[in-house]
Length: 503
Image 1: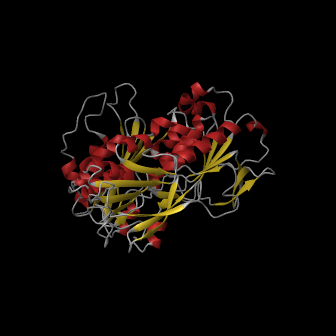
Image 2 (image 1 turned 135 degrees about the vertical axis):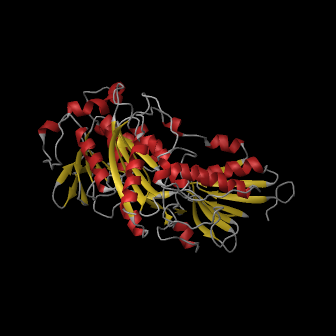
Image 3 (image 1 turned 120 degrees about the horizontal axis):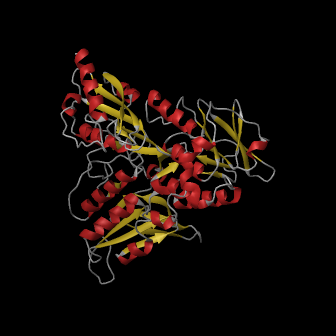
């Protein structure tokens, strides 16, 4: 037990990681226990705390004009609340037996040990960086932190996008791009294409959430964008038939999609700067490359300390977010695995929504209260320009992996009553368990008004509703907001009939 300067006994909470989970835990613990009861020390190796990493693509693309708008609480605000926050300080070792950790000042290299009574590990996730020639060349960027975002913006400022568009006009490029650029099948272009002299060229490697969001950001910046994707369709979080809809829409926006293509190397010019991305079949010219391959739990410290990890490499916790087998250690955010309430299996999902909830739960428990995190259903939404992409629950391959037999249906509908102005099309796919009719998953692709409808399904999944029960949901209706039968309920009706046919 540590002693305060006044000589009274107080506990010391040490937090590793200064973003969503870590600082939410520290802040909640501070609300419940004052400085005389609980000393809080937090280590963050970067320059910023409590920021929205999910907002970085929209800052890069110009939708969010100021980086500071992404920061929910500054280091100064945390310190004013009695949290000893140490920026540019990287934890290099956790000594579980002696309840202490070693930290290094990133700028000076000085190292020191800090003891703890309670420890929170919120080390987040690290971007997957391909092990290939040129992956670390100037002009190749990941987008995980605000520092990453600033570095990419600096590169874009040097390489320039479409010089015909002033910055104030960038917001309209998504809407206008399909008229300004021809659409067509993926194509490999020569490195000396004269028609591209007035436009910057960007290649995005990967077509998951980060990949499609960064494609939009670069379109907004005026770049010609190529997305190189290992999978058969973009958005592997969807089933391929739904991913195909995203593919077609992206090409309609002027984005060149290259599917079933693995990047083999990144080529550089005489100055060492990136000049192209190469696959086995072709080379794609690039002034800038953005890596959107995905992330893995950052659990290097935890693994070295002998803490339990799951099959996805994330820390394993109990319902209170306490690391299994360790009474004084908690973990939350992108570095942990969570229970999938639909499949019953552990998953790794890197989302700020979960990280903030984890932090609240950890801080409540450390502060003397009681809270649990029951699990997730896997809800996520994204967009590329005006195309909205949403999913919750299981894909077909997830259901098969879990040993579930299911039926799937797909319907076409609209966001509003068909006769109401600006009604937009949407496609809804729904999976239901055979025999029981339990909802297993929903995917939605459409224009404005489509994405957030997935929340209906997320609630139904959490409540373990059947698709027949969903058809009776009393959802809001008026022509500006929905057809008489909401698209999600249309899908539920069709799924219910399919379940009955297979009964």
